[in-house]
Amino acid sequence: MLRDPGLIPLSHQHHNGLALSVMTRRSLAQDASEGNLRMLGKRIVDRYEIELTNHFRIEEQTVFPAAAACPLVEGLIADHREMERLVEGIRRTPTPALMEEFCELITRHIRTEENELFEWMQRELPRETLDRLGQVIDAQAVRICL
Image 1 (cartoon, one colour):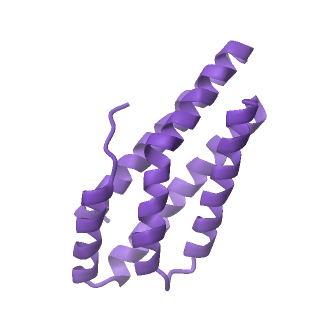
Image 2: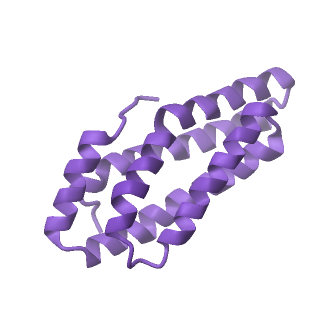
Image 3: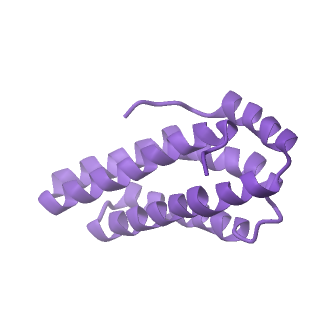
């Protein structure tokens, strides 16, 4: 199913999250030095502060309430809290294990939202609701270029 236009800004942010995961994993595989760990940790924390906090807020205040009947919502919120915990750990002490755990979680979480939640929303929510969500998302989404 094609992505509803109102959800596309979140899908773009998802793309950035997946790219962050891929770039982090590739870099860790090539160089696990302390300097690279600091650089990768800073990148994760920066992306969290620039984009993920915005993304989580939009989802939790707008998307998830509209999709409250979807059984995935509770687990997705729990994923947000776990990613926040992991980012705080990476901020304090960036380790390969924490970064891998973060990359695994963000990748799984994004795939669930894209392949299951958004598909459910497009099937189950009325057009007016999707249009209203799209207006809010469009107005609030941070747009960055990697």
